Length: 59
Image 1 (tube, rainbow, N blue to C red):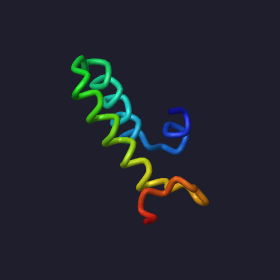
Image 2 (tube, rainbow, N blue to C red):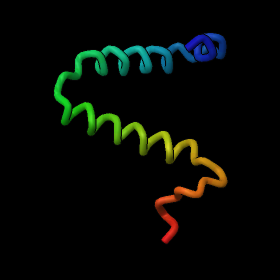
Image 3 (cartoon, one colour):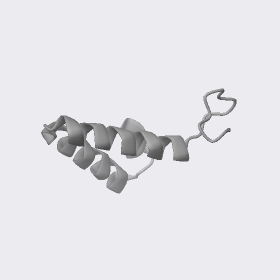
Image 4 (cartoon, one colour):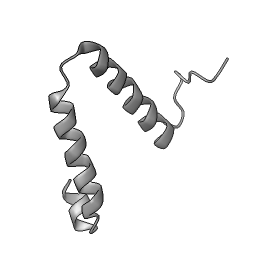
């Protein structure tokens, strides 16, 4: 989070803090699983691993 503040991206920091507050309130295992999958896929789309042998798109 320090990098976000250093770069002057206060709005991004607020978004991350809000996400963490919401995450702490999740109690249902079903919703926790859905949120984990969503953000996992989002991160994979935004930051694809190069040279990864476990590529799901390869067929």
